[in-house]
Length: 353
Length: 236
Image (cartoon, rainbow over all chains, first blue to last red; front, top):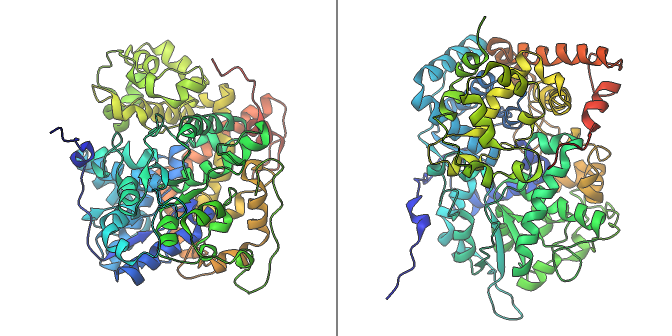
């Protein structure tokens, strides 16, 4: 009997059980603050874990570093300051929310391993600038790694599955792990760059089916300076479009992304392409909903979609909620914390809402 | 006179990124930038390892080194462990240190990135932040972004954030004592000097181009020139 070889098994990593130091992401906070709230809620309320959210945290400089305005020595030392905050807390298991940060921290750990003089220089720089000392983390895991680790425990608590309630069939899910999760140092990711499994493992465990489309590993198109400068954004949208065209024949029910930037681009570029060219990648002109993995987990756990931030997406999520049978109140969608109705966003011209 | 190749070699990322390229072109096959721009990471490796000073200087002054998106797809496939993306990072660093970046349209954009992302790090402690993403500068964000920004406090409060307040939580205000330490790190590590070089060479270029240039902010002619200029001669 032929047994299918699971190549992703060659890329396994150790993920700490408890006592995490959480590093917030500039991009995720900006676009998906509800996702970070949801992750911490899952960790504390569903899994009973200890995880610290330090108010003294700041950027790792990742976007500035990869758009080449922040010098390497500066980046190393700013990141060392974050490690010094973790050292002060007594924690050793580092969980950076951003994929750019995750890639950057794995780069620093590997750099300091192979070039110990860089580590010494960074220690001196930090000492001179702030008087601080730092220890290296004993474990670095992306939050998706942690969710992956506890995917079976979470399944036991879930109210819904990734199954179409009308047909009983698994939902077809496109997953995107983000370049700097698996391409910078593959050994730090589940499945590496070639056999991405961190999101696939969640999808399969929670009842869905992963779409293995040709451009699955292609970049979302962020490209740092290629998006940050308006004159370059054609690069960004063209690369995302390549992915959409590749996935379209498989008729995915939704996309789930690991990186906050990728989540935002795959949502917003669908709007842009619809407005510029009148093209959408679903059958109904509404686009393919794009979720963060925290939103996917929170949705299946039965959290109110409007409490976790699903109303802040440009591609509307109701078609997905209806397929799964998620209960929600449409009138609650645009209610703020104050309890007041805050009005609806304008409707796009082409992308249907 | 110090050779440019030796300057590149001083950076450990260059040492890690270039290990005798055999010109197979696998990096080019997988590169998103190669599909979009007149860009070929194989040629970058080949040119740099030739140690031809004249060609390296020409490269440092060109648009070419600014086409890469640093996705690091090249790192996953090279049979010899080369990383063109890392080589690019070092070329860009040296181009800015020597002032060569203002010789190309794409290189001049570093001024806009420094004024937005670079300053935001020092002023707020964030690389990117909801406050700096103006819907007019980011039409691709759609009407949902305007709605989000217009109702930022009420929306983000519902999502459990702590927008613009002290204490833990998403989008919190980062205390001044933390920002002071970040600025001090910049001073000690040369980060401030690097910013100042980008400013100095950009100011000189603005003068050459007879464009207005303010010492701070983005409301000046040169900023919008580099942010928007596209000669559309970059693609294949």
